[in-house]
Structure formats: C-alpha cells, structure tokens
Length: 258
Image 1 (cartoon, rainbow, N blue to C red):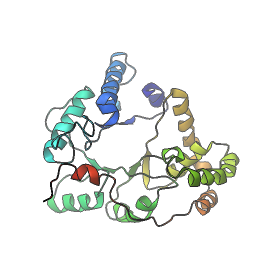
Image 2: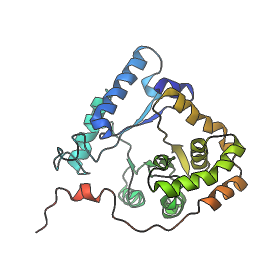
Image 3: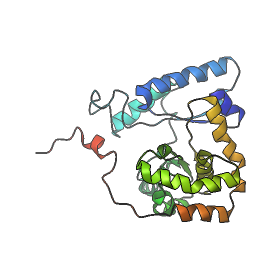
C-alpha cells in the first residue's frame, strides 16, 4: 500500500500510538525498513506523523501515566512510537509538533516565549463537519499562516446519524455523476478544494481503494466555484449543539473529586 502511495507522489503517512494497540506502528516500521533495504524508497523521502494521547494499552489497562498529555507521557510516548516505527529516537530529534486541539492558543504562547510553534493542525473536516475549519480557525490562517492536515473526508462513510447523511449523499449524487466521480471521490475533492487545507488524510484497506482515492487529485480543478456552491447549498454550514469534548472522559478518568 505504501509503495502504491509513493508511486503516486504521496510520502506522508499518519499513525498514532493507539492505532491497533500499537500494532499499526510496528507494521509500518517493518514496511519502512523493508522498503529501504529493497531500495524502494529512501528514509529521508518519507514523512511519518505519529500522535500521543490515548496510549497503547487500551482504555481499561492504561494508567494515569500511560495516557494524556503530561510531559512524561508526551516524551515517553514519542520515544516509544519512534522505536515501534524503527526510527531514530535520539534526544533532540523530535523538533516539530502539531496539535489536534487549542492550536491557536499554542501558537500565541510559543510566539510569546520564543519557542518553536506547532507546524500543523489536524482537525476533522468534511461536508458534515465544517465549522471549526471554516469559522473557528480563521485566525490560524490570517495571523499565523498555518495550513491544515485534515482527517475523515468521508465523515466515517456517513455512518453517524446515518439516515440524514444517507439522504444528503443521495442529493449529491447528480453532482458526482456530472464530474464523473464516485460520492467518496467527490467528498475528498471538496476537501482538497479548500485552499486552507494543505493535506487530506485518506484511508484505504486495499491498493485498489487507495488508487481510487488518489484519482481525486485530477478532479480538483474540475470542481468550479459554481459546483462548490451547488454542493454547499445542499449541505449548508449549520450551527451545532455544543457537546462535551470527545476526549474529556479520557482526561478525567484518573481524576478524583471529593
């Protein structure tokens, strides 16, 4: 799969300590090493993203030092992830960071203290989830000049709130047919058409699926402003009910109140 990606100019691979209870990191590390040995790619040509927070021991097995964003877990989690990927983990080599939350505040703090600011933000962005990228993050682009690496362009294959999202997909099908693409390709193309988005993270379970996703690179220029207006008229940006942070339960799990 990684070979197919490289053949099409994709050299950035996203991972996290929690994916597959760390088995994904081990697998990717083995593939990276094999590719270097077989001269399929050079290590310096690959960009590997990893993330820490949930830990790799699972929800119930993980302790207070195995999860979260304490200095201890950030340092140890990053080092462990590097080892799983069979990448160099000498002190000082983890120089660049990204955030999935509070990135604007993080940029302000690092600028004020003369530190290295985050270089990337990784929010969810798709036709169903737009508010953060299109409204809340405006200072991120105008003040800090930061682009986005977004995830879930298919909105989990429209599974949450399935009935409503399936109905929306039916409305979008004529536009997809007009462009000669599938609904999945239309969704990825729409994300790529946002000039604030630097990279869209796509997933695939087999090489053929990855190739279908990659075809969207040739469709972006066909999606005209008028076409985007049609799409956004069918899926308007809506105010959503404010809900508890999805990670709040993890953060509070080891706290005691009394």
